[in-house]
Amino acid sequence: MSFIQRATSAAPPGYETPEFPSLYWPLPIKGADTYYLYKPGDIWRFTMLWTLVFFIAIHLAAAAWACIIQWRNWRLIWIAPIVFVVVGGAQGFIAGSVVGGLLGGVYQAGYFKMSTWIPFVWALVNALVLILSSFAIHATVLNQDVRHNNCARVKNWESGRTLYKEKILKPNIEAHQLLVKVSHVAQNRTDVQSYDCNAFGEGSVFGCDFAGEVESVGAFRKGLDAVEDGYQEYRYGKISAFKIVYEL
Image 1: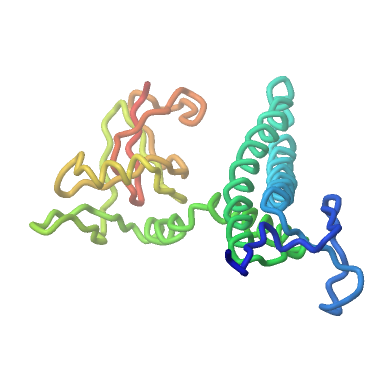
Image 2: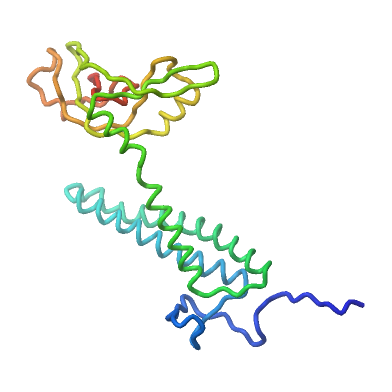
């Protein structure tokens, strides 16, 4: 007979799970009014709920901004808050469940008690990751390059592929084309996939997403509004200072 018995929980006798959110003033650290979580299910629930709150709030803020700048399209834009809340709720539930489940397992394995502030902090971390992941940070470097008429061109080596910077000249356009002076550019996931599989070979320059001003219009389209007259397709492969755009 063993004299060592393994406890199933670190919770003290008579412990009752506090109501959500049960936050308390954390100073002093060992104050009288403190709340702790002991059960993995409670840790998961608190973390998931806080993550839902943060994610839905962030998505609602984004939807509100979309409604403000697109208020003229009120017949369609009203659906934006609904879609954003659904998407934010789904993301929050998944992210909160993953983090909350891991936290519950770790704290249960070590017989630790968890302050009710810990789920709040981890939900905040999830929210910050969501915000940071929404920015195309690498586009900042690309935008600096295009303003100096530079492009990133593919170079193939025996050991693999690399990108190198190259100065470009202003291209000439044909009668059915227009030329766009690029001001901002972002790297799309299809650019990464094309680079990884070497879709366009030696010397190619990738770029799907860009914005800029019309520099010149071909002879066939002189006098027409180039922005509103159906110019939507462009020749693929130009993270650079200029884009040649084809008429649809």
